[in-house]
Image (tube, rainbow, N blue to C red):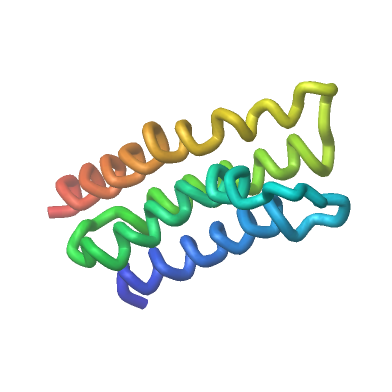
Length: 118
């Protein structure tokens, strides 16, 4: 499986999970759902665009995997096992953390792994 295919598969799973969180869960009935949905799914749109536009950029699948693991853990912490009334506040920070920390971290980890293997 090529790196671009791995990136696309992981990003698609993450995008679907984010769409489910933003729109598909039972009880989500917001008249203005597009802005919060764009906010929640935004990091996945960015990584999808990077996969399409920069096919030679290595490490996107590692970044997408980091983002997916964080998305699953956050979903569990907020919706499955919330530990308080402010558990959902983490979703406000989610896009910034995914784009500013996890995306560069995954690319950096992949770059270091490639440098050490040669």
